[in-house]
Image (cartoon, rainbow, N blue to C red; front, side, top):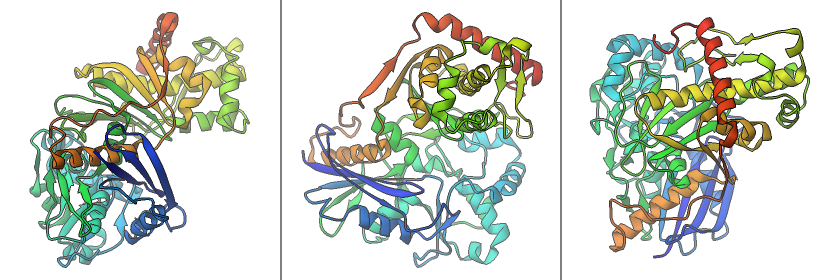
Length: 479
C-alpha cells in the first residue's frame, strides 16, 4: 500500500517513525528535542514546528504518502480571528489552574453535573479549565480568543497550510472538557461558561478520515492525543487495559461505550478507533518508589527493587498506603500516606522497600477495580513506563492485578499509533481498507507474565491493603 509516517510531539521532543503501511514495520526514525529549556507551562507552538522540521531532516520523509500526528492532548492553543496565537500555548497540568477547576465545578453544579455533561470532572490540565483561568487572569487575551485548538489540531492545520477548515478527532476532543464522548457532540455552553463567550471549535472527523492533503499531495490523517495514539500503537482491544507507571499512575481500558461516573474517578475518553477509553488516574505511582528510595538512602529504583527482593509477599505485615501527595483515586486530596503494621520484625529496610512496591501496585489495583466495577472487561494488562522493567514490579504485578501482564518492549507507541492512523486513512483513500476496520499491524514484541500459583498470595496482599485503607479512610470509594 505504501509508506506512512507518524509523528509524536510530546512535551519535550518530537519523534517520527516511518513505517510500512501494510505491516507496520518501522523503516526509519527521527528525533529532535523541543528548542526550549526545561518544561515551561507556556510554550510558543512554533517550537513544535521547529522540532518537527529538525526531526524530519536528512530526507526522513522521502517516499512517505501519508502522515499521522500525535501530540499532548491537554495543550490549549488559543487563536484570534486571523488565526494567530493570542498567547503561548497552555500545556501540562499547571497548578495555577487548580482554582479555576474548582470554580468551574461549582459553576455547573458539582461533579455529577460535569460527569453527565462531558464524562469528566474539570482538572487543572483540562483545556476547559485553562479557558477559565485565561478569562480570570488574562481577560484581554480571553476577549481576543476566537478559535480553540489542541496541539495535534494546530500541527495538522500547519502541515496543511492553514486552511479555512480546522479539524480534530474524537479522541482529542474528548479530553477538552467541552465535548462529550457519550453524545459525540460539543457543549458550546461550557466553552462560554469557561471563557465568557463562544469560540470556533474544530470539526470532529472520523478515525479513518483524512484531515486533508498538502499542496505536495501528502495525505494528513485526523491526528489524535498521545494517550489515544499510544493505545492504538499498542494494538489494545476489548479485554485489554493499560497501566502506566509515571510519577503519577493511570489505568485505561477499551470499552464499547462511554462511562459517566458521578464520583469523577473515571474520565470518559474516546479512542482513535471508534471505541472508548475510560481512564482512572492515581497521583502516586513512581513517586512512591522514589520517596522510599530516598528514605532508605538508595541511589536509584534498581537498588530499591533489589532490596525488595530480599523480603517476601506481604512485607512481613507492613502496608504502605502511598497517598504521599494526597490522592485522586480514591478522592483524598488533602490526606497523607500511611505506614501500618509496624512490628519489631517488620522494621527492616527490605520490608519497607517491598511495601513501597506493593503499595504502589495495590493503589493501581484499586484504580483497575473502579473500571471493573463499572463492567469494564479486563483480562490482559499492558504495563508501561520505565518502572515496568523493574524485577520487583514484574514479580508482583500479575498476582496483585489478578490478570496476565504484558510488558512491551520500549518504543514510542504514540508515534506508531499515529503512523497506523495514517495507514488507515491512506488505505481508505485508495479503496483498500474498510473505514470501520484499521490495518492489522503486528502487535508489539513483549514479555508475558502470568499470575500462576502466586494469585492467592497476591489477593491476600490486596485484602490486607484494603483493610488498612478502610480503617484509615472508611468509605473512601463510596463517598
